[in-house]
Length: 335
Image (cartoon, rainbow, N blue to C red):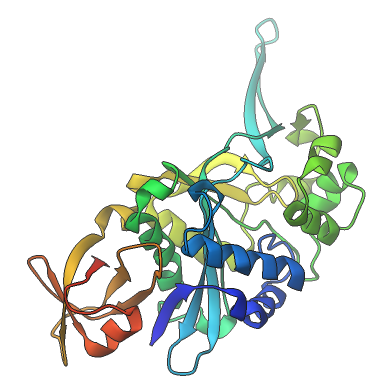
């Protein structure tokens, strides 16, 4: 059975493997054991409630319960931009006209902004290639919203997600090569590493202080602004199905889009409901549902069949064991 569970320090080898497989541009999964170890410590402390709610970064692992194999990762960062700026480019439309010549123009510019301070971020969604079918990605993605819905007061009313921008098959990033690299004279990987490992002061020091006119950029750079890496297209579709939409912001390094949605309007947050657990050897249900625990501490989620009647969800013993719940406990269910 596939189970989504909290990540902790013992997952370092699993997380490093996923970081290596994720490839370039996946800022939240650096191929750095020290950074990943710190992140897993942070995840443990977040689930245990050892830190202030706005400082928490919850990391979730997708595990096959029978084998112990870890095949995917997702995360929820309670707040962004509080200790370190959350920089983006905003794509701004500028209208210009000359009445005497009868000419009207609309010019797009890229403007450095820091607009999302305090927002919650869902991210780090990555699965091994052989797990990208059969609903595993949807389970992992939706589990993040079940986590938010379990205790919504721990999260901001605005939720965002950043998607990786376009890279060529040989690993080149058109937007970085033609635009960002002009301001950050270093390798993409080094800038990516510094984004996750420093206070981002280098971005404030070196980023363009004036708007960049899109029409003046080379065509390869213009073509990828706001576009998603091919591997990110399924993630984008999942986000859109939950109500997320592009908000006009792009990543300053690879030009990938940012999407956002109000917390209480996210479909899974809105539609999941709390039900009291009953346990049986077998259950009758037409379709499996998304089932999670009803609290952030010890959070777990599965997609399994459950019989729903009134305020009760009857689970099989196997499902109850996977969630570590018993009769009389409360779970959240989305059908």
